[in-house]
Amino acid sequence: MYYLCFLFISLSSILYLYRYIKDSTFKKIRFFILYLIFTVLVELVVSFALNKGVDNTNYIYNIYSLIEFNLLFMFYYEVSNDKITKRTIIGSITLFNVTCFTWYLFHNFSFSHFNSFVIVLGAFLMAIILFLSLREILLSDKIVNYKTDIIFWITTGLLLYYLGSIPLMGIYSFMEKGVAFFQIHNIQFVVTILLHSCVIIGLLWSWKKVE
Amino acid sequence: MELEESRIIIVVITTILTILGVVFLVVLFTVFQNRKNKLLLERAENKKRYEREIAETQIEIREETLRNISWELHDNIGQLLTLARIQLQHASPESMGEISEIIAKSLTEVRALSKIINPDFINNVKLKKALELEIARFNRLNYIEASLEVIGRELEINQKHGIIIFRILQEFFSNTIKHSKATKLEVFLNYKDDSVEIKAQDNGVGFDVVRIGLKGIGLQNIKARAKLINAEAKFKSEPQKGTSLIINYYI
Image: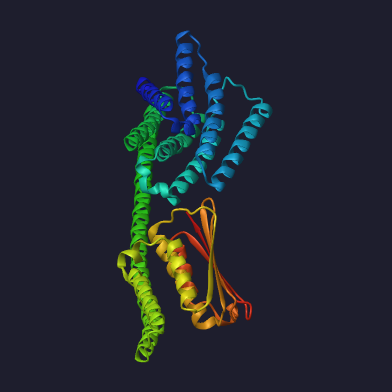
């Protein structure tokens, strides 16, 4: 399951990077492409570390979560034309970073523990931004060609991913590592595959439109 | 036993997540598709309304043109030919030159009229040219002392939009001549970078816009028509200070 998931992430990264090089209009979504590439790199580093016998890769995932949400916030800030959405994004960036900083500083939280709080907070803020982004598409002229709108597909994928992730992260916090833990992990892989399927569908649809 | 319970919980979570995901997608696509259909319907309706308005405007311009021709035939050419006939009845070799001049003038007027009657001319004439002709007609028939000032480099205006702007101005001119008791009518055609400002003003009796209201003078109609072509129409009038109409058309 992990390899299938990694295949989807790599495929979407390669396709988006290719389009970014070929099509100048893709500069608008550079932060999303950066997020995809960063995700692939993190997965590669984690695989390498596990192969080298490193047991705890939580450090990497904790740092990844911080950067991941900031990249996505910035991506939506660049593509949004709506004042409310932009203000919400600025508020979310501030709230997310200040809360994370405070959390790590005052809770004496070690990076070696998987920090599901950061992910739940980020996912929650992202869900709000994603709903606002969908509302923006719904109220604009983009609605006429929404199926060929790449932002619509990315937003749908991310919304499925984060809405699916919030309950899973909650469960992780109360669960010991065991067979059941890894089975829950498989659900996380499924939502990741769903996210990247949407992302790839969006790219292919918009590709068709350009041609 | 514990493992079995965990598995049940996982199956329940997965099922709930899957159902929620599917419901979310169905709702999302339904909402988006409905909104899309609604917008497309609105657009089709607006297009129909626009086409209908253009057709109505063209008919109104034709009717106005026919009315003007009727007046011109009666008041101008009719008068000239009557004068020529009277002079012919008392003709002398000395008056032949004058009679010939009157007939030549009548002929020029008839030619000018025949040009205006041509439907191709009505449909294809540019806004600037149409205004020039209208102003020239007012001066020729001594209806009012009219002038047209063109500022800036002429921009291409959508033909159908030009028809609507011309009709709005024609209605204003008609009101000025019929009701304002004005002696002067000034029209300014100001071409800007991405817009055109058309200002028409008279020195007539004016009226209290608030008291008389806007419906009577057809301003609602003017505003609705202007909106249809992405233009703004502003109407100003004060008793004894004349009336002005400013149209801002954005290209």
